[in-house]
Amino acid sequence: MSNSIPVPVAGASPAEILKAGIDAANGPVFLACSFSLEDVAIIDIAHAAGLKLGVFALDTGRLHEETYEVAEALSARYPLTIDWYFPRHEEVEKLEREKGLFSFRESLENRHECCRIRKVEPLLRALKGVAGWVTGMRREQSVTRNDLHAIERDEQNGGILKINPLLEWSERQVMEYAREHHLPENRLYKQKFRSIGCAPCTRAIGPWDHVREGRWWWESPGQKECGLHR
Image: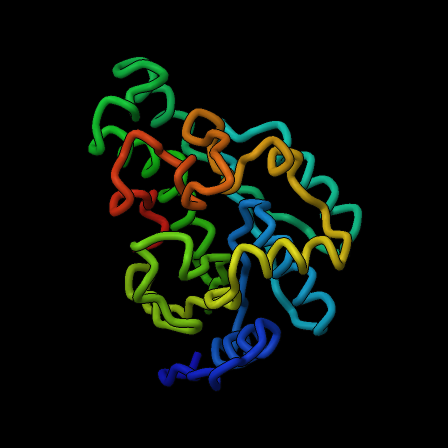
């Protein structure tokens, strides 16, 4: 992996950003896939451009059934293998025995604990040995994502490259791309979900609400990250 970070030219396409990041990583690069429209679009873009991109997913144990349906549809449509990572069962058992099934709604500290067990620790295992990882994050999704770059160094995870090819896309652009290319789509989008994570932490919202309003709706906008991205 090169020490330099490529800076995509203004207006670079997601495919161009992906290629620049993968080339610079000079090693295995994986998409962290939550089966959102963004992640599905990235898989399609990489496939169309002939880019070598692995895919892994974090099964928190509390995903929606509809999310698994998208995973199956992707596996049937593309020549890809999804590497699944799971929480350590001892930690989940300890958490639920000591604090119950919904402790994450009691405090920000408890919610971060649940996310750490179910998402962050499995991510650390998923990123072992990789040179870079790809996310579907977009700048307009949250105030916590204002300072992101299309390609950046992820110091939180050993300095590997982090590639955000859809960073400047709007929600409408993602939806238009998905419809134009007839991509597998989570059925929850048709039920007014706009950001889909774990079932207990995700709900439908109105058309004028912020896109992340339905995630951890009991928390302030500046707190709506799970620890995967800081």
